[in-house]
Image 1 (cartoon, rainbow, N blue to C red):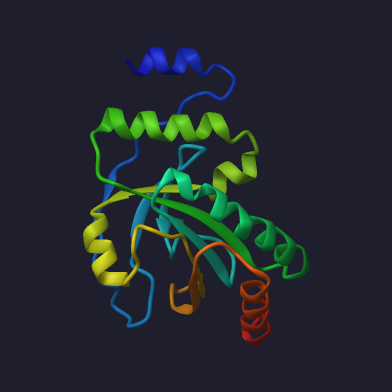
Image 2: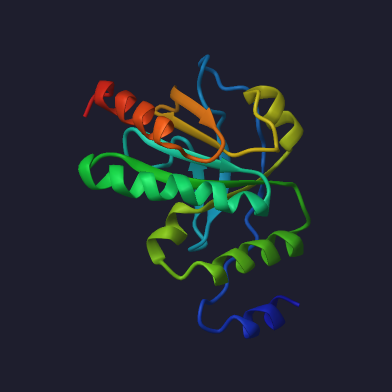
Length: 180
């Protein structure tokens, strides 16, 4: 089956299925939980400690239909990144655990839809116990979250929903207070 999928995606290649990530409350209060995921280049990634940049904006989504909301944040994040050289952003699709063939199918489906190599490196899919994640973070599956963290994973700022001018202004205010 994997070979059949890879043969249908010849231009983009294939990546593995990644693994299922444990999720537990962070050691530091008001910090993002430690998770493991796979980016769309096929690299295993650790969130938040294995990410580059400071501060870092995590765009956390739970449903495919939320991509439109995520895209509103990506537009803002790209603009901010051009004026804040250390700032980075990452898309974090957070999906229920699934079998290896399911994870393989999802990863490669997303990969085939994203041709930009930088966007592939910044899209890190996490397969985990979402109910436990929701319990730890207070998040819910019906919206996206923009979470600004420092390099240690401490949450500096957080909001939910599609980006608005008010969100952009609040994020810029937080960035002006963050150490460069």
